[in-house]
Length: 236
Ligand SMILES: *Cc1c(COP(=O)(O)O)cnc(C)c1O
Image (cartoon, rainbow, N blue to C red; front, side):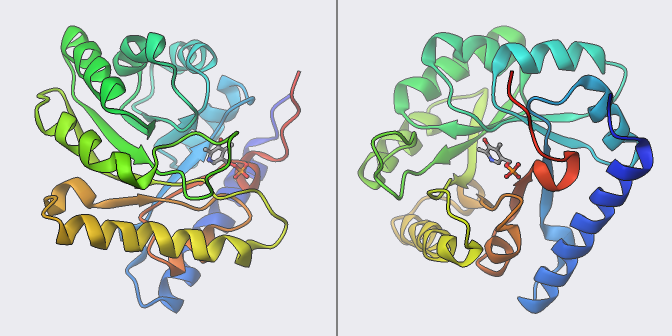
């Protein structure tokens, strides 16, 4: 059973307040920070309750689970974000379903997403996931691969890169993520200096339930929050 409406609404309001406080600590305008509610493993009813509480952006990490859920809330005007790894054989379907894809990690994937978006007659925003930890288990592009990814996207008409995303190694201490968040911002500055247009570098998607305040202090424009809104996940 979904948590009742007031629980999800109360948690959402709590997260929004935390976002506002972190923004004000950093001297930033809270309206420049977008909250993506990560609804993976939760049902369409949870999405509906969050939407009733004013939430528009939702994040999912698996294509099939996401498209099933989208179909059940098709009557709502929501914006869907893919935050999990995307295999290239699913790129076309992902481009047909999602508005923003946070996990772009290669030039070939960019071109497949462009084909998929063209076939579906839509435009899709992309974020390049940067692997800062260099962990074998992590996805994302290395810094050296970024120029080729931006170049591939600049030749595309149906997708456009609008920023960077990162997922630091999981730790209990939110402060441990700060150097990774700082690093992502520094990489953006470097890309700017290298001549990548401002519109391609607008967003920094970083920060989850336990560390989004730190991410906002370090410049996040999109935070991806699941547990703090929907409660803890149980995996089948
Ligand atoms: C699950 C997930 C989140 C949300 O994590 P919480 O800790 O539940 O807030 C954010 N980003 C990505 C990439 C995820 O997979």
